[in-house]
Image 1 (cartoon, rainbow over the protein chains, first blue to last red):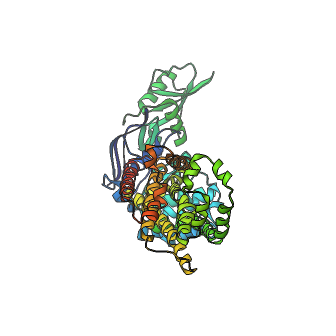
Image 2: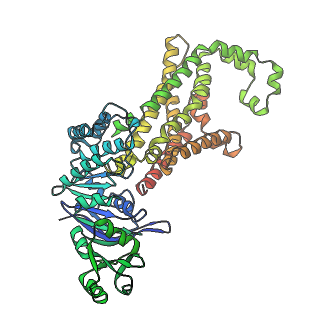
Length: 288
Length: 259
């Protein structure tokens, strides 16, 4: 079952074409990451899904409904800016959410999470640091009994220990809940994500399973005299001695091996390497 | 959701009420001083006043001082026509300008809009703001009448409903207009500055020939109610139409906005 379906989504801000006809589907129970550099269109896409931004064209379905407003009880959102009402204390914030949302908000769970994060529950949020505000926001959002969690940079500004805790929480949601999220921290995406879409300048330039991407793309080092530029590769680095290229598929690797007469080093890539290759060189993915 | 909205406004509402209560105490306590001050102004000073001020004074300071001794006149002129009346649009501005603009500026609107529909957010914000404004305006219109009555002043309560109606309609007209500014703005400064410009501009309209009709201050202050004992229905219906127009326009903008 598909929880989020995005078809040919376009968004213009005046003359700026922020999202350029992207399509993707988020399967139920998965953790789906939208990656991309700043200005790629990730946040705009999430906001279009949540009706915070009106798409210029395209179709969006959330939980089989084209009107996300009807599904708000089943959706929870952590925005990039995790600001809650400064004048409240965490306890006040729980009461606020209980009044706002009724039964879909689990106040006890929010209190437990705040306790887990060791937040001072009787101090005004105005006195909180950036990290504490993020923890508070996550406590409130994770306390919603939602089916879909949309998280925009959920761990931004957290220390490594808390970040790991939050990642564990997100990973524990998978299966029962669906998570669509963005992050700049690729190593954390790698730890928890099932499927990634890499966005660049408003387009999705790669979508696939993380393992599939790792299988598909290899980092190949060849002596500098071997000509590989005419092949489907991205040149990552070139020195007097060697060239490092990103290659997609066994066929191209075979061709390089032939030309280099065996003087080739093939290595697996982590998500960060793949991401950098896409963003710097714009590797074209056949699926798109 | 309305309770949450009212809770957000509690500091503003309390501050406004305290300020107006202080004004009311001063208005009650300084009656003799006010009359004496008016009576003490020498005639030559009155004559040297600009024409516009003399026009506002009507039949002159001596007669004004005499009339201020009438309980009804003092209450109307010094409270509804001055201390309280002039602040009605400012109260509307203070209540309305942060309603949407603060949430956008501080990015807290994301939380609301992913928990409730746009219609629910809009209605609850507009309604709770209006509720608080009407509460303040009605309370501060009625309270001095009741207090002065208890103090034994010779006050007629027959005009009170008409005063309440005009203060409320006038206040809500400004509120609905300032709401638009709040909806359109991404920060709190712009709607406040725009609101102040409107208030200053509206006061100046009173000095201009045909545009004078757009000056709502005499209506809010209940000039006609005091002198003729009647509600100014043309302004009342006009206000209701303006409120409806601004609220509907605000909704049309809000429901299509990007956040």
